[in-house]
Image 1 (cartoon, rainbow, N blue to C red):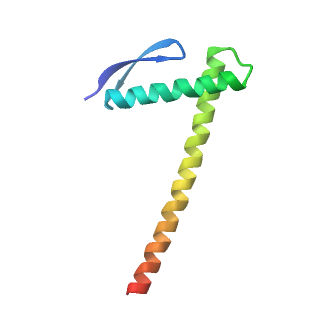
Image 2 (cartoon, one colour):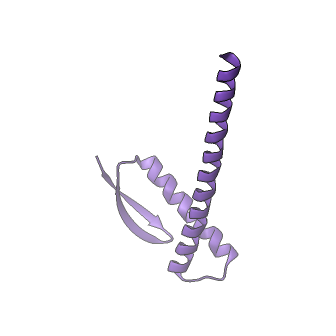
Length: 89
C-alpha cells in the first residue's frame, strides 16, 4: 500500500507516494541532498535545476558502476560454483 511522504530536496518540498517505509524514504532524501551539496562545493553551478541534474548524473554513474561490479561478481561466483562442482563431482 502506497503512503504519502513529504521530502525536502535542496530546499524544495515534495510529496511522493511510495510503498517503502519512512526510514528508507528519509535515507533517499538524505543521500540526494548530500549529493547536491557535494556538487555545490565542487562546481560553480548556482541554478537549483543544474545542481539537481549534476547530482542525478553523479548518482547515475554510481549506479552504473555498481551494476558492472555486481555483474562481474555474479559471473565470478558462477565460475567458482562450477569449479567447486567439478572438483566435488
